[in-house]
Length: 280
Image (cartoon, rainbow, N blue to C red; front, side, top):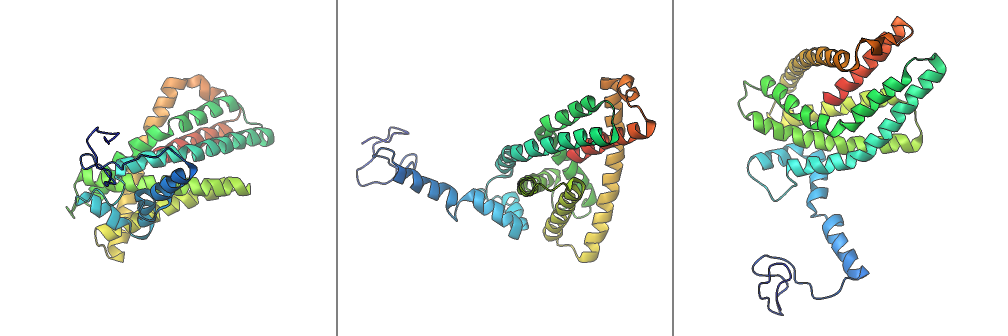
């Protein structure tokens, strides 16, 4: 018989095509075959996706260093893993958007906020472009990391991008699980939840960098402070640019619609912080 993929001749005794390596399939699809394929491709311990997720928790430095050193078959590549995580994070984005809009409506009912529709539009824009923002934040993280570890000269800028492709993808999956738990339990601890996730990301990234660069605890503290300093500089620059863009595209009338100056400052700063959180 001929291979159904490449049309190469395949012997009846062969289980795979010698030309393209595809498995020989000579039976119709059945539930038994479908379950076997599902078990082998998805549930198997040897599955690359499952292995990548688990190993990025237990030995993340091995996963990242393996890819940088040229190992390409053991784990999912960082670009593919990021795309998978972004696809899965669509669920958490939907739930977070719903929660954010509900919070705005609750504030409107209790505090009498003005221009809630404008704030909702801003929130929707943030979540609509969340995937783009995530992709844009990775080179920024990598640049800051490359500056912090410039004296080490172990990894170049592109290799730092690989580090943050994996860490951001893993964080997106953790974020999805956390959002599902919070949403399922109907808890309203949004601020604590957000700070908890940011704390997890910072600690998780610090552990990876400590292992990759073989840092002592004291060196890790110094590098972390250095990183926070650079992050603060980037945050100020980004906040100024964000405020300028908001003023340019929304116009001064957007800010004049707020009834009380104090409330306007709170609402504008909340929007800026939310934008900054999504970018940085």
